[in-house]
Image (tube, rainbow, N blue to C red):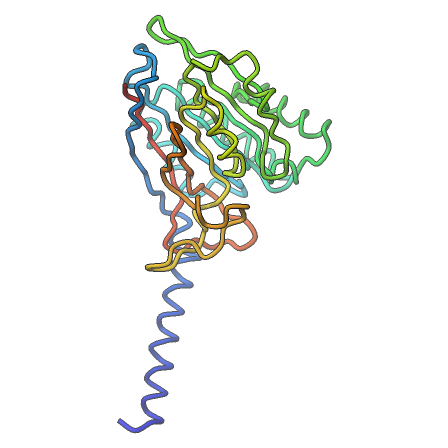
Length: 281
């Protein structure tokens, strides 16, 4: 084969590969849900919560209820968790409120168990004033019966035991107040912490009660390359906490790859994710 023919063949192969990547990233992966399952074992877990099953969603960025979101509701119906949590970024813009509330209402009815949400950075972008974000949270709670935790905590009771559920406001834009979030939580307690982004991981690892922290925000990088992983993650940690399970000290951290997309509607080697976590002693 002469040089010109080699160049043409190379161009054809490269073009075909680029086309396959674009088809996969724009038309296939965004609508295909991955279900990640893991077990977290902690000696600090109260006996009454042994076997607690939690489903985590994150970063909905709800423009419309696509196949991946429908599949998420089906999985929740099948898994029958004891708790469903959503770690931020429900919407990008205020005009997405109605579709978001419709999805949340359907999810809450399908789950039949408590559903808890914490705010993300895009929620603050959509509702940039203290009054507007408070009104949005109130609307979510009134319309869907889903609890919004924003620098707050609640006590969970099960089989005669109790643990704390802590929810921070968005740490990426600096809205998280850990002192307020952990107010009244004993250092000896088991606290499940919901936060939007990994930005506060090192500070949370210093909180004795923070035994398990669930976050999102990164979208897993949204675009990942073979042997390299996430290309870019919007975090002060870079790609260190792009996705998956981590441990700092005695604290477990899990970063969910998210459901939706931001900036560019593409996912490559990084499908939307629903996480099923089971807690054991």
